[in-house]
Image 1 (cartoon, rainbow over the protein chains, first blue to last red):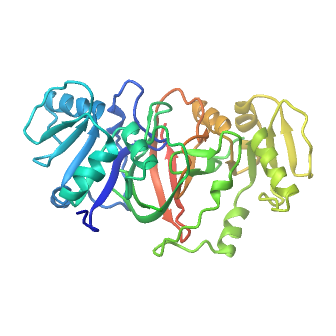
Image 2: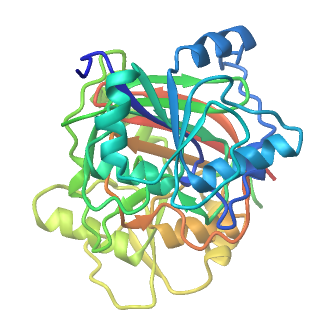
Image 3: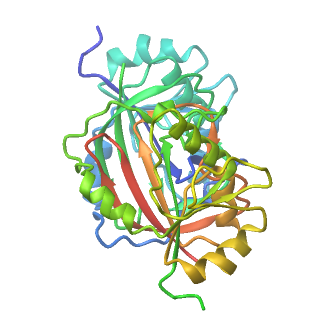
Length: 188
Length: 188
């Protein structure tokens, strides 16, 4: 049974010109050095409480490879002990017990499996998975965090969206590091 | 002599996925129907005061053709009696005295001509002109107004930006119609 309180959220960080990574996958531009005096602090305790509210993550295989690359480089694992589902047809390294690979249909995974088991489902990349989620009507919410930089070219936040998607603005937050987080409800 | 108070601002409205128009130039998606209760009112008197602070507009020829098309369709002329410079190599209809055509170099127009005559210079489209302005280091400020809609494909806000441009967040405003306006200073 699908709980009416189940929510599927797409969240990624983006450059102002709408790219989540350079064409070769690099995200070095995420390290900006802006200061926005009127912004909120990104307080570690608040971030932890927020991350603890997420019940599972879903990501594409390239995002997963970026995540395990970060961990291998000593930059840590961003997803804690939260279950993480990776969409892939390839055989990839499984670096921890919380990781599950899924080679089937995205709609079947989210609607058929995850919505009945998890309340707060986060899709965290990349652009192809985010685009598919919207195109297939699987997402309830889009959280779009804009870094204060233009990078000119790269992988777009949403790939292959073949129609308009109307949104409802729910929340706007600006942070001391110049990041602006927009939260939208997907309108049906 | 160039006044130190002269400012060149790029301003356009964009979909959340970063497009200023559909691929065929249509901007029908600008008419969204969102309501953001916590947003500011777009008050007519405040808009007029704000528009009166703009000393001249610069635009590309396609943006100009869209503007005169709007006027011909009875939708009004958005630029009042403010001088308007149109970048073009073509011969276009000149519908009012405030319009001047410029077939030369963009940097020469802005730095050589406009900065000495006007204090508050607004570049209002399209993506090619905006991209050129940033690429050539001609812009001081980017005002990016995000409508609550995704359109999937179209003309990007910045075309052919061949390098990163670091920005400083100056202002964030959200309006009752769900539009979010971000103002950034271009960092040198």
